[in-house]
Length: 58
Image (cartoon, rainbow, N blue to C red; front, side, top):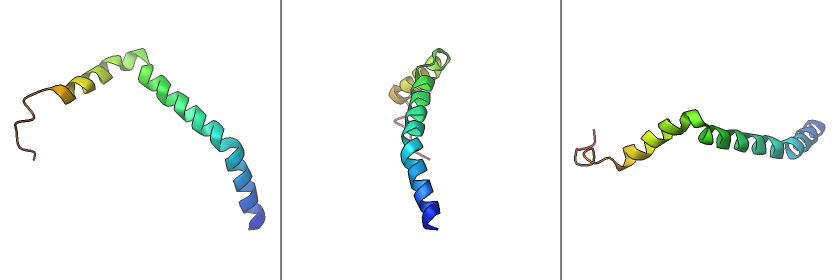
């Protein structure tokens, strides 16, 4: 059991950082991908649209 824990700890220390960096790069690439521009523009404007604010929440 101790050897398994030691192996998993070494693996997490060695490759966890690279996994985190890779996922961060993937998220940033998704956000700045040109085909997603309109989707994010609509989402940004939806927050600022008036009219929905005056209705009760259901």
